[in-house]
Image (cartoon, rainbow, N blue to C red; front, side, top):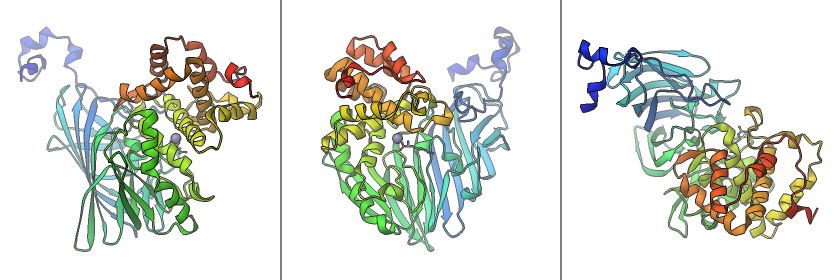
Length: 472
Ligand code: ARG
Ligand code: ZN
């Protein structure tokens, strides 16, 4: 109550109005983007979400999704209106209990105008009732909802949420989630975190999933289809739930031979990165033709295509490495993608070494030697690749090479201290490449600006690093 004395209008006192600048009295629209130069429309300004409650119903036969999102947030500005990022059809919006006006704009903006302007730093509850066919929606020329023969999957980076729930769609605004989805009996709904319960009535089964650690919107996933679930526990005591489409065909064995090793891999990674940061774990493999895998929090998404040549534990290592590098500590802006992909690739190199398939140093040397100076590979700057090259192979491979160069420069003691210390330092938050450099400088006591500039920010092949040169 006390702080309301600084809010004009709350008291209706003209004398108080005079005491404060006119600009402070104005409630204005929240920005339609959170301020990421790579993706100006992603996320929104003016509020901070703490929790999403999604209560949905999905019909696999028609790909129709309907339900209610209840979003708990707090305003960070005086707002006359604000946006969510969303693509499906909205039937009703309520803000703090009262029906609100809404309209759509741009590629994915849902503009909400509450009855009464919202004061800065006050609780905000938004209820959005909606429905639609996610696979029919396109934004920016593509869809992140993948239809499968028996359902659908929402998984993509840097964006997937807008196809199935309204959100502040940027990793800077993490929140906890309850995802509850009703599907026809005999069908499964897979999401992040812990399966709290399932219940069936009237021919429909409701699946209740909970993520109680902060989670970025793009790391929040939903897959519906006929899945076989397996359960287990890691040596360190984390419950594991994996899910395999019943229709993986010839890839079924290789998929299971890889993803069933999730617990073992997470325990192995924790030696390098610190304790596994979440309380649920697993992986899921839907029957999709999508090419990529994705580090959806606690439960990565794998495409059957990753297992077309037999087992591929390396991709499991990659997606689980992201649980620390990407999920626990997320990018500040999408230009910081090196912290995700460079380190997830480097974890694969460490796994290769562990498996006797080539050391990290050998793989770094190979990466350096196998790309001649005129290869376009060197034109992609892992430290600032641009949105068009965000997931270019160079971000991964040049990125991991830079990690090996850093390791050789600061020595193994400092390097492995950094590798483990970083996830703890920024746990559940966001950080940038510059934050990483400062942290590595602090731990090692060495200036690293030149090394970072050469290996992450130059569009050309650097001179051979001393430690790699010996085997070139
Ligand atoms: N972070 C994902 C991975 O490295 C990459 C996702 C790429 N996304 C895409 N639309 N190509 O596993
Ligand atoms: Zn990755």
